[in-house]
Image (tube, rainbow, N blue to C red; front, side):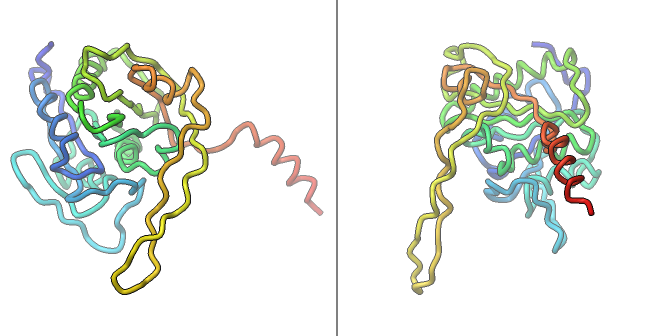
Length: 256
């Protein structure tokens, strides 16, 4: 493996599971052998935070250990502060993860892991979001990312595009390979679940994610289910371009 420290490639690492989560700590142990890594992550689990920014109070970055900071905010807050030179700012690329569980299909709408990478791409840095489809073999996902980064100089992506990567929860030697995929879709989520409150107040857990509805051969769901690493290019343009013509006709017909 090439020693990229000699090339001064500097990586910002973040996540939504918190600074001391096993995923991000495994990732930094792998990547710091080759790259100059700085961690800026939430001070606690912020899973499901999506792209939320904290706008109602100031944020406090705290140096916990060398080149590792915790922030009392969301994953997007962390990346925003790090890249706006509150914490250095001089990073060549951003890696978000390793997430404790999948970010497949519709999951990307809620994922703080994907949101952190999205904020980085919005601020002009190449970005990867990486998730382990399980909670055991984090070293497998870390090795995959190290491999991809060593060849990243040969990849050119359009502006505002990030890579969403999901890795099967198996030993590295059992991976079948890598597939470029599209996002699949899940069925409607399960209903909210009533919870017990000591004061008798009505409260609920958000319902669990549903099984895939669209897991066709070209989707991320299909790839990981069959032992492949899934790489999906995603961007923030949520416009349904195929509906524009029909919508324009409808609006024109409404005109007085």
